[in-house]
Amino acid sequence: MRGSRPKKRVAALGSAGALVTATLIAGAVAAPANASAGSGYGQDREARGTAIAAARAAKAGIDWQDCPADWNLAKPIQCGYVTVPLDYAKPYGKQIKLAVDRIGNTGTKAERQGALIYNPGGPGGSGLRFPARVTSKNAVWANAAKAYDFVGFDPRGVGKSAPISCVDPQEFVKAPKADPVPDSEADKLAQRKLAREYAEGCQERSGAMLPHMTTPNTARDLDVIRAALGEKKLNFLGVSYGTYLGAVYGTLFPGHVRRMVVDSVVNPSRDKIWYQANLDQDVAFEGRWKDWQDWVAKNDATYHLGTTRAAVQAKWLQLRATAKKNPIGGVVGPAELISFFQSAPYYDSAWAPTASVFSKYVAGDTQALVDAAAPDLSDTAGNASSENGNAVYTAVECADAKWPTSWRKWDRDNTRLHKDHPFMTWANAWMNLPCATWPAKQQTPVDVKTGKGLPGVLIVQSERDAATPYEGAVELHKRFKGSRLITEKDAGSHGVTGLVNPCINPRVDSYLLTGKLDGADVTCAPHATPKP
Image: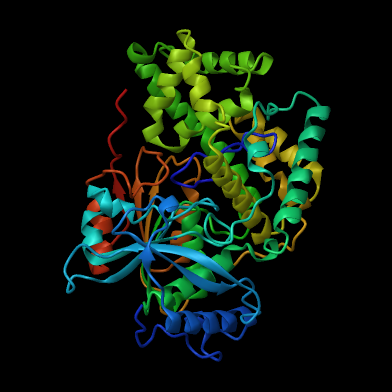
């Protein structure tokens, strides 16, 4: 269930995966160990451990400083760390440091409503760029910025927060990788071997962290960060996987939520986390891929790729076949093509750039495609970040739930799905296959539901989202009583709240500023279609 907002996810293994971050106030201290489950601090050991860690963090606060130069976060953004237990069942055991950053609210002291904490998704995405929405004067967020400090963090295992790794980053990005669509049993066997070796690499390089790389632990971390900020209750914005983090937090700590916006929603049903969610994604990707092809065909005067979807698809298949036989520039094969082209079904903002590169290639300029789709081996920092993102993605999804271990099941499900949904199915399968041989303990997903004290949550979703299909928003809406769903009709960009839509933006502002939700669910017209 890939879906980190800001960065292109590089292919996993031999597949194409891409994806496919105080003053102590009374009440910020944790409730005692015998508090009711509604507060998130029930009788279980992890709940008690969270209470202990949150009380410690509330007392310590955060030592805010100018950010280190290599974090590329200019003043007035400030950075710091929050210490959390690796294992909440052992709150006095090994500790790890989580990187956090913030920018103060832009309004008056009287206008301030606390901190708004952000998670962009992944799992494996960094939230540290969030305060830059204020420094870059992002108009969509200007009203919320008056009232809130914008706080980002790197979740456990990510970036600056005890990062994990599964393979040498330069090896990870090397190209060309094998075509994810298998031609034979031998191809499948080779991919299975790569997946098993990847899982073993995770154990070898990051074994001590793996059992603790779960969404519930990241939700507990979020509660400790809340306490460290001196906040009695959490204001949270989660996109993509960040919606699942929000759903789990809201279930574990319903009485600690003040405002929560979830955008582009992971289906929180236990039956979906995570194996089935990825299969559902393959179907949705095919639909959105077709939407993009329709748009390209409509703009044939600009791109010259064909006047019908079928014509554009034929050009795609031709490009794929060429790259398979003879990788373009020696480095861009089918796996690299999928990694690059999948950004179009993900984000409308990628529609024109992707079509433009494709168009140049068909017109005889292969360099544009090589520049766009091939790895840059000189970008060691970027490659390390991609490898880390993929490691966290894999570790969290593999640890959150029990995955099928039978290859026959994987083979049957993906072979069947591939017939009508060929764009992403096998690439996605190989990306997730390490979970079939995962060396660390796999949990049972949290049963997401409404607990005592949970306020109304705002859910925002586009109807044709590829990465997080629409049914996920409907499912969370059912589970969180009193929530409201805003549907962006006839649209499919992943991450709706950052786009300009006069029907959606004021509603998000109104909720964050006043806590008020519409009396009923709302359907909005789509944001503007991309211009060629």
